[in-house]
Length: 100
Image (cartoon, one colour):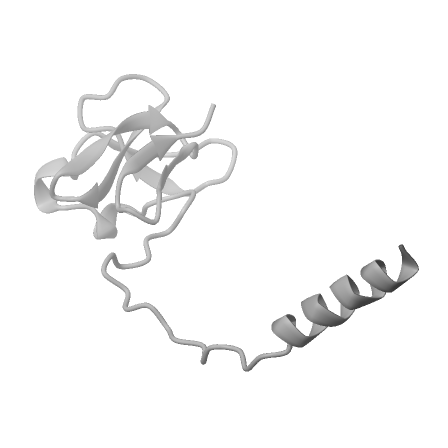
């Protein structure tokens, strides 16, 4: 039994000793966008209305008809919308997500 275990260990270790594949970088398709806040200057012009300053952080934001205490986010021309102030972000696929 011990011989069988030793043969198995020797086989596994010789199979695992190999050269690693070279590290390759993936091309960035989606531009990196600020994850937790978007300044009014980063929004498309059509979404830059109903702007105010957040009372807690002092940072400016725009609502664009989203409602009280909501901020408009723009991740791409196809993905934009409203989330609570400071809770929206763009994922790595360029889609808008709202954190609770």
